[in-house]
Image 1 (cartoon, rainbow, N blue to C red):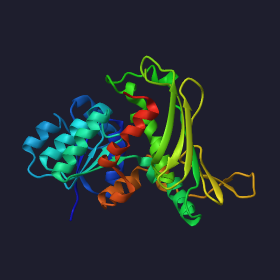
Image 2: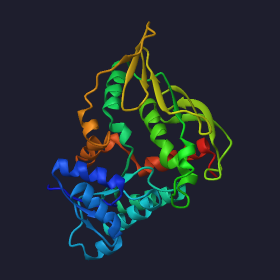
Image 3: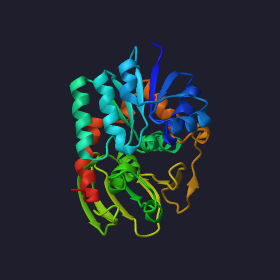
Image 4: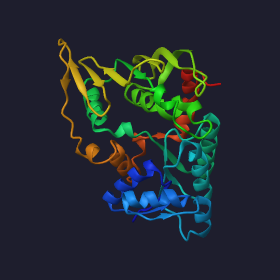
Length: 315
């Protein structure tokens, strides 16, 4: 069946999706709101944007798409996805984290279940060449025995950014979970976890220093920390019986072999990740080929929200 794709949004993330869709040679329409962003989008991609917003477009659309990609701002993810589901769209890839908070994610998850729609979340790091290679090594070694991760954010930059109300206040959910999702994707989602937080900013009052530990559903022990008040970076380290795998940065993979203190670069075929936004090409390809098992669904995201809220001390 020939794919018909709707790409919702005309911002910087939508530009990256358009580059991939053009390369995959699929038919797609871009649906946005304002004319100014539409003009910039066309300059960057050569693709016209249908302006006026999704609601107006749905009213005059002659047929529904086979697949839709939601690449709006975080504040509009849930409402946009709900509109698509209510219109009858059944295959949706939504930018992470799927909503601004647990309440929005729950609304989307319940409606998706009622309408038998598939909503997958676009955690593109699952599709990095480095992660794909690490998965192969982990499987060969018999699984993950322990892992640790850090999700420090650069607060000195974030504090100056202008965002919609609620976006920076939920920064752990809408940005840091890129790291957390990858760690749990590789090592298993928590079965038990103990979380500690301290500090906070005016724009993220719940917390600014984080630490915790637990055991995953696969039996791997894990720990994490982050300090948004201090220097740091995103890091994931995964340990097997034979290797320690380092993602620092996450686009690359380094390995330490048992019995050695040397860190070695692991060869990865990352040509695609260098040609497009890393992970995005294989993510879109998997979505269009209905390879749902690689993604986290909106229902799974909802099931994880209690853990995420504990980690960030969200009420």
